[in-house]
Length: 261
Image (tube, rainbow, N blue to C red; front, side):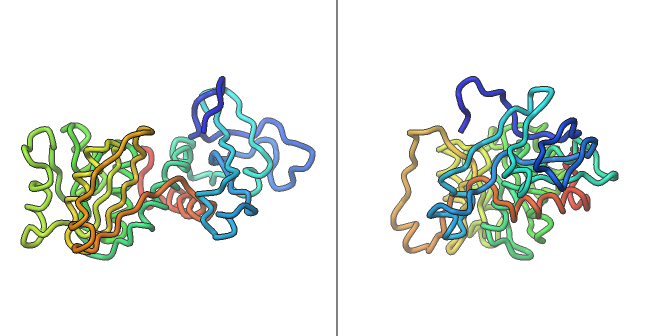
């Protein structure tokens, strides 16, 4: 994903200072934002329209530097001119928000669904805001009271400090109808033990979105009877696609959520 000696960072917005000879749609001085990859549209998974699983994704890092070069394929498909009303700080959140938009759409959230988001870091907070836009009731779980205050600001209806609960799963279920569990459970931590708790927080027929990527080589055990007889839908969701990048850009520029927070 990141090549040796690469400059870190893939969330940025800035001004064009130089363009290549084949560039037609942008000019020097344009305020732009781009994400870090684009699908090839030719590989096996692209032909299945699973663009986030493209076999030829090349990641364009370098946002921690003063200048960054945008490859032509990203320029054509995943680069946008920032409207005057939109701040650089808002636009720079395009890439992570596009990933979360993908995650939200794959979670199949409906109006009045009860949704738990485990983790209240930047990704978790975006999940909270977007779940609220879907009309859901949201439970935010984290270890930090400070982060949980941010979760309230982003629209969480309930907050649980997991460090103060002997049973996090029971604490979440306590907030649901007849303690059955949530309709949708999302992990935004990337911690295997939290993955397992996320699965247990769902009601029968729930959707479990294990969004947070765990360290390579880790694993979780799943109760086979729970999975089968409760008809759980358990999925992982990775990265973004041009479709979700456009949706995220529209969310930012229309200020449906405040990405500067």
